[in-house]
Length: 317
Image (cartoon, rainbow, N blue to C red; front, side, top):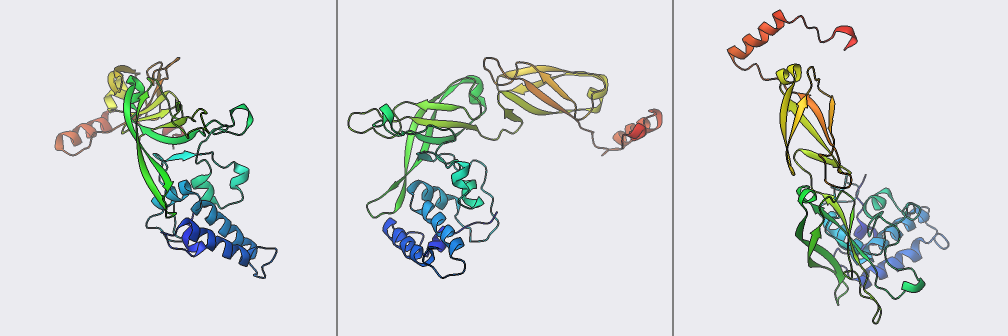
């Protein structure tokens, strides 16, 4: 995917005010609108201008784009880093696939789900019309918090527009109670922490979508936990009982005789706590000791002579 410089598309500086962005858009719209333009590529250029204006005219999208796009130029290969939008507080909702289809893949990748991945955020008329709009943020937690529960201080970046029409980021700090057994993608709802309501109406809520920071050993999938378990050749061949260290404490796992790399063992109920709890899925990886000493080489040579073993027999390769 190629990076798009929206400031270059509109012909404005990166510190342009909201008025300067609007004026640039109107000028380009008069030039490229398909109904009036004689330019051969008017329709494509108009789509690019609309996309750039959609981002730069919105303080939230612009702030996120500015932070993500530092150091990139138009046409440069680009992949957004994982969880790049974590810590931004957004209002409203994301774009549906149909709406995002009007823009480029670059836009859809960055903003297709910004502002909430669930339908129904905010207000849309009816008896709750005056209620404040719900806000949304993705937050990154430690996997260990899912085992014990915790209260964590979370900092959110809140984009706002200053009196000069320039985007500023304010930091909002919240103490958030993390329930035991929380899983990836789950929503923590903070009542009344969204946008204020009209007059005396109720404020909206702040919806925190939970994601886990990368763990050095464990990979969560729902409430299940995946773990690659290194075992020595003799443990795999003879069987063994191995202690696996988990955030909730050690669990002893029986390795069956003759275990091979790639075999998966399931330990029920030892994943993330819950009703029901998840499972621990162990992928066995047989690790060979190095033949880096005369004694080690002698042992390997003895095995080669005395064990009638052919690993490529019976169509294994």
